[in-house]
Length: 142
Image (cartoon, rainbow, N blue to C red):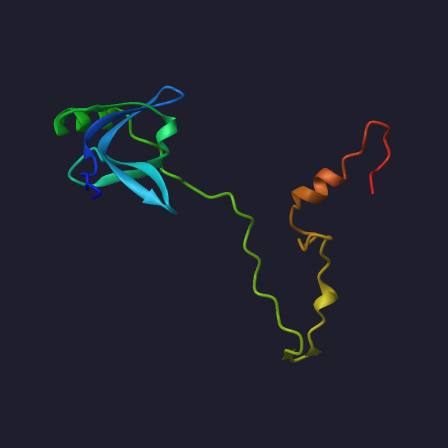
């Protein structure tokens, strides 16, 4: 007969490999069948959570249970930086579909020059930039 155990949860100081320390409400979590430790880091004011992060147990050096007051005071000084901006390529305007007509007739989709990677020549393509760097002998690789 399997015994059911209670999942761990409580206010803790979480010490991670790499000498990072976080404080907040810690509990067990399962994502895609794998075990993780979830920490909800409180904000500076009120009950709001400023960040929720998941860590694999192997990346944790220590978990120290503390009172809510201690965890909140520690978290005030150790607020994680929120993600400000994802580094995604600029979104291109929608392309006209083949066969769409305007006042001048059918749209020529070849009118806008693009590189081999589908990026407009007017935009920066990091792949083309890397390919355009000459090798040590000064010749271009093809």
